[in-house]
Length: 116
Image 1 (tube, rainbow, N blue to C red):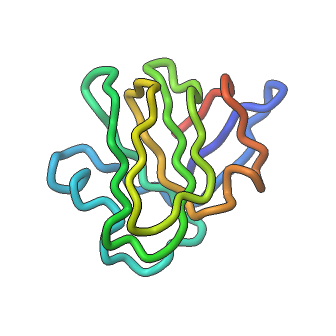
Image 2: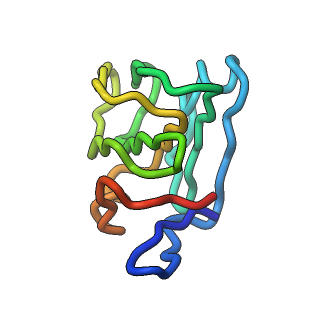
């Protein structure tokens, strides 16, 4: 499960978490997947990096949450469109993909801490 800390309490964001630790699983991401619902895909890097987010062969909107080494949110990209590329300036150690609209629905904010 994926949680966010709000006022000292854990608030559930999604029930299922898929960890993407290797280059192959990170490179393919959600390409060719059916739409996800109550699910988060978490990309784990060995150090803080700037990432390029490619939505090629992803057929539905996603929210992207960039997280630092302390698991605090540093950037949120809302409703990323299929067939586009995004280049956030912020560095991250973790990158979370959620179905589009989840970040707004769960009121995620920069500086909040995620737990997974």
